[in-house]
Amino acid sequence: MSETLKSFYQERKEHFYKEKEFLAEKFGQILYERIKAEATEEDKRVILFIDAGTTLLPFFKVLDNLMQKDKGSAAWLGNFMIVTNNLGGVSWLADQEELKKANGSPKQDEKTKLASKCFLLPGKFLLEYKATVGFSKDTEGFSKDMGPVFGNILLNLQADKQIENVGENVKGYMKKKNILVKTIALITGNWIRIRRFNGSIPIPLARGEGHLDVKVNMAKWADEVYVISPLGKIFSGHDEDYVTEAIKKEIEKSYEELRTKKIAGVHGHDPKRKFKLVTTCRPDEGTFILKESSENIYSYLSGKKASEETSEDASKDGSGKEIAINPNTSVPYEKDIGPGCWKIALRSSDPEGSLQSFDKLLREFKTPKTSIEDVPHLMFEFADLSADHVAQFKREFPHDYCRNKHFMKAFHVPEDLQKSILKDYKEMKKLSDAEEKD
Image (cartoon, rainbow, N blue to C red):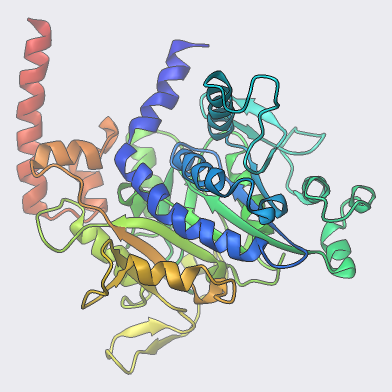
């Protein structure tokens, strides 16, 4: 394996490392309880799509650890399957089973078994992303329809023995035979943009061969879509052109957005109602570089900010909704905004103000009667950052091409703080470069 490609994946893995682990640990517990509640229902199957990317890598670890505790006593695990194109995650699962066997559990003459079934999506292997893309026999141009593959997935879940002969009309067959399947998707992006019209939702941006098609298909077939991202990868308050041009200006690479019109209607869900952001937020106390960006995202997703997209921008993704006045705040808001956004405080008692407790979230989320339409966007308090501004800057802006005033402005860093940080960062870099020459 090329050293350059190994380092590319490893470098991405280390970006926002603590934050990615934190999100998986916190949201993973909630997601697991939701899956468990669904899969325990009689004759119901649950499928969890997990997208490629290092952001979602820790979810394999968290979910596997929780399932291992239930393994052997939970019949519902037979009704659950992970479906993924994330080879990094699948490799981790395989390595864990080998480690257990090497340590004598299970016994050497027994077969090792995963806690749940796992279906690896077929396709072309992309080494630098440790992912597969394209699911059909004709991978040229990449498949636009997961239907036939979905039939194979249901066959593996033993939802119906005849489904392998169904062909492409899987959706119609499922409805006719009353096959109950809950599909949940965890997806991410190289960057995320908060859409500002027709219901503010997170829109993943992707680049590279076939990646966007995989995300579209996962979202298309899912009943619930959770867009997972560290705070430092989310643009808010900017339209698509601003974001793509800002990135392209720095690295000369183009990104595509996931268009919600491509995924509407497969399970009858309005895209803006089944897309939920799961990210972090910065506490009010203390000085955090991305505090204003955090507040901006919360304001959009909670419906406190007015839609600012032009009708021309709105036409790219569907027609915009009428803007109304919120009678409680006298601030314009978008109709049908849904339950808004929760900031989650990681303590047991319900705190005052806009923060919700983790325990309350767990109680609300674990019941299958809570539909995706009633689930809020989630922002978990994260403060494990250095008090030193330059050290924090390097963590929040891990790419060299992001460490400039243009990107800092795009992430709502106050101008005086921008100048101070960049001045100290450049001085530190000069000293570091001088030491390397010596």
